[in-house]
Image 1 (cartoon, rainbow, N blue to C red):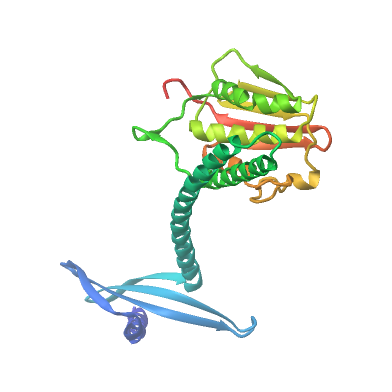
Image 2: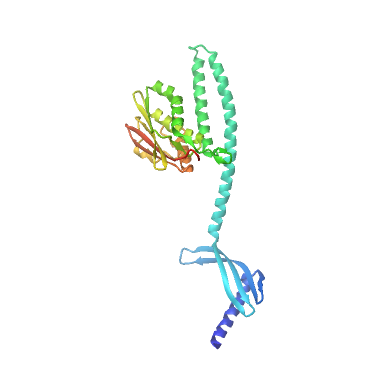
Length: 320
């Protein structure tokens, strides 16, 4: 027993010796019997000479709990200063990115306004030329380039566009069939010019998806436009939509040039494009939209035979 008391006394004396290094504040958390807490912090630097002189730094927090008889226990927290610094850097980068995102979206909006004005004046100017006037050809080129620039800005803006909120909730009950039929009418003229036919296949049930209407439209436009660009005279575009468990599946198949196997892993990378004048943002934007809405996109392609895009959306109910 005497030895136990002596060991405790020695331990208390050692702890008191180090209090001057660790303790900054002290307070009482219990009066009867009295219970005291002393707190402090310390920067510990450890250098390992046998590991290429690596140095590690830690912030150590120490709480000493004691009563009138001496120390009862300790609470120690250790945090790697390197990881803490990395976390601070990441938080700063995220905050900077959010600010840049807002500024970029504002600039895009401002850039589109003069583009529409310039396009309108060019169309008026074009109407004043006779058919064989060379300036009419130049005007057509300028209009096409303005359209390409506007598409690039639209792709960029849609990456950061917030969901449409209606009465505090997102509008998430959209008919896939209706959207596809509307878009086919939109693309019908360009398909006729290229000699492309199309086939639509829908089930008998109403097919509703849980996604914002504008985002669904953007996804389908990107994919259908790619399919049309890849095809030529005599090719056929097939679009199927059906339900599978709690999912709505859309398959878009073209008979175009297909995608090289080496390029399949790159198609969702921003600014990668196999088109001569492509922005390389269409499929990247599409994947971001699908992922953010709990869906998925997969692409199977064979060079020279065509491509099929598989889309899966969470199914929506009519009362959702």
